[in-house]
Length: 207
Length: 207
DNA sequence: CCGGTTATTGGACAGTTGCGCAATACCGGC
DNA sequence: GCCGGTATTGCGCAACTGTCCAATAACCGG
Image (tube, rainbow over all chains, first blue to last red; front, side):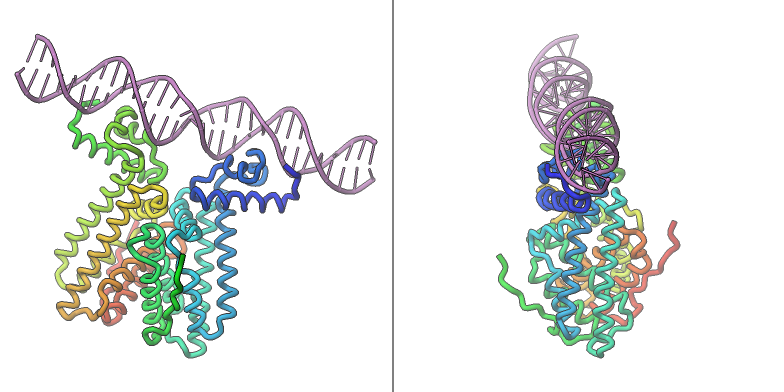
């Protein structure tokens, strides 16, 4: 394999681990899988990462971090607080075979037994909650939202989406994306004292 | 090992699998683990179950089903609708190292790759949602709750608890049981148009 | 062009995995 | 007391696991 700079190689390992995690699940990724995906030897992985836990944590952090940054961008461009929240709901709601949300499920389950992964998913979850809280505070400042506990409201909104999304991804049929979006929107409207329907997402036809 | 009737042996296997799952996580249970826990040979497990997926599904179903039945009993004895919902919140909220909720996390994550487990966890989740929906309908009938979408409300309440509980169990420190109970109660009060504080759970000192 | 640094190899190690199958041990009914 | 049925054994199979390490190869400044 071509010799690479440490930064590039580290990044290549994370990419490869991610590709495998999407196919097989985060918990099922092995050193040899990652090496095969990169087309390198297996020893190389342990030259850059102390353990598989570290590899998985880095891989998870890449997706979750990138999606967080992407969502921050979307929200920054959304304009008024209502549009911000609508955009948030729409971008967070998973489709039935959503690999990104499946990684979250894997990470939450594995957190109990993999310290590095727990640290990463905890930190990222906190960041997502912070994002929602900021959106709420902005809306309250503008006078569009009414809410006297932005932190609690943020966790409630985030949790309801997580809880519903989990059903969509784990047991496709029980709850579908349309129901989940409508239900989450209703909850957020009540939370922020908005008129019913304000946060209704334009549901698009999905493949 | 003493010879047992098929029913007894099947049950013993499930018990053993459960004991291991609590220690190591649902996904990490192996045929040999279960055999060792029972004090039997490993071949015996495959005499009763076609695959590990089936064993795990049966084990998960045992805990989730028993807790569902226990909660049904508690609710039946709780009396008025407000007491029912308070009891529900209290009994559902996990403590930091809650092995039962950790099993739910494991099951949701594994559902994607283990058909039997997916079927079981889907069915049980549906049953829990039904339980909440029934409690809501009862309260509406009595005139204590106001709610024009009991099904949606049930899923919203269940999901918010799942989403918050997930944080408590996966990342102990981020959200604690007290916050989660307060937040879930607030959400349920709004959902059912109850005065703030009606569902406040008497928080007990925990070890 | 050469020497030192270091990215990379590939196999050793000491396990572990799910599953299947022939052999054995045990029990209830006759 | 014996016998048929079946619960139970325990090992074989082929593959896989994370981690480590000596050896090799490739790139860099001089």
